[in-house]
Structures are given as structure tokens and as C-alpha cells.
Length: 298
Image (cartoon, rainbow, N blue to C red):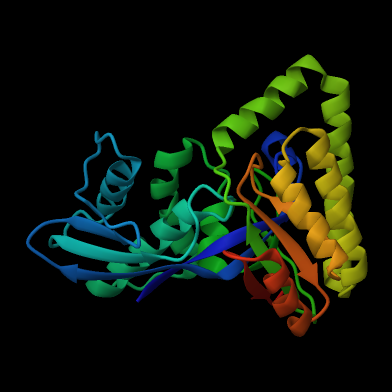
């Protein structure tokens, strides 16, 4: 059974696009996949009831991504890959990367190929390039490897260690989000008002560096405060919706140590940091349908 994790960006989204560091975690909710020798190459995706053949020039990105992955296996039989997706698409949780990692993992297992998870992450870039053109590499790496890591574009991921797990509760706003549109919006703001936006990026970088220290020290109270501050800065860049703000405020009122949007914004997901597992379960109930608990060991 192949597996690709989802991911949550704890702090640093958008600023990371412009050279600042970010901190991300791999979560245990994601995508599973099975591959088997078949009469023709085929990709099935549940629960979306999609059935696709690979096509490097196809209209559907999944067709092109599947073709890009299969091209990594020049001498192989035809394969049918079945996936079960347990992440919302376009919600900032790295769904596309998780599918790619799971598909590659399943094919490797079927063909008897042994590959380190870090090498699996590198191979999955072929899939991610179809969706994101020039991906940062953070989604596919966290999907394959998991854990908690500090990332700066162009540098290798730096694993962060702590003796305390992170109790996260992820909530989905139900609003669709476009990473491309949100990144373009921030770029337009940067061009029109560089002083304001660069100040925001500098503030986010300070928060990320302090969050690294808080995670390593197991100081989740301080980490929660930093999450709230990062959310405020992202809101100032017009990335947060009223629904996401309301969900964050509800989580804080219910006892979360901190809460913020995650990913591109404009919809998608938020998350809250709970002090313990039991409180995380209670926050899940507060955030309602589609929310789930993600326990992450650093």
C-alpha cells in the first residue's frame, strides 16, 4: 500500500515564496494507493470517481502528472493504480503532492523497487511540476518524509526536534482556494507597496525563527501566540476570509493556544493548536464538519 501524507504550514506561507523561511509538518491523513499489472495504464481516484489514462498533452492535469510519473519507469508493464484520497483538494493541505507520492510508492512496491522516502520525495517532483510549474519542494518532501521541518526555498529541509508532540486540529472552511490567485495577489501588493509588504515578510520571518525555538523547547504556549501573530499579518495581506477568521476566533475562545489560516488563503483550511489530545478532540467538535485532529511528533 502506497502512502502520501498531507501537510500543514505552521508559519511562513507566502513569505516563503519570496525567500523567507517557513515551518511545515506532515500529517497522517493523506492518500493511499495500490498498483497492479493490468492491460492498460489507468489511474482511478476515489472518492471522486475519476478514471484517467496517462496523456502528456491531456487537458486534465492528473493525466499529465500520471504520464510524467510513468515516464520515470521506462521498462515496465502496464499498470492500474487505485487511490483513496482523504484530503480536500485545493485547500492548502498538499493534496496533489500526497497523490503523487502515494502513486509512486505504490508503483515502487509493485515493481519491487526499494527507494528511501527522501528519494521518493525527489521523484514526486515530476508529478508536482505539472500542477505548480516550479514547485518549492516542500509539499512533496513533507508528504514523503513527515515530521516537522524548517524550509527555505533553495535549501534542504531542516528537521526540527522536540520532546512534545503537536496537537493540531484542522478545519475546512468549505470555501475553494486558488494558490495561483493568492500568490499573484501578494505579488501585486508587493509591486504596488513594497515597503508595507516587505515589512510584513520581515515580521513573518521573525515569527518563524521564534517558532523554531519554541518547538524545540516544547513551549507550545509561545508557539500558539506566534501562530496568532502570523495569522494577523496574513490577514493584513488580504489573504484571510471572514469564515476562516470566525473559525480561528471560535477555536481560541474554546481554549486553543493559537489558531491561523494555513496555505494560500482566500478559503481552504485553518488549524488550531491544542494543549493536549483531549482538548484537540473538543476543538474538533467546535470546528464542526470536515475538521480532524492531526498529532505530529517533532
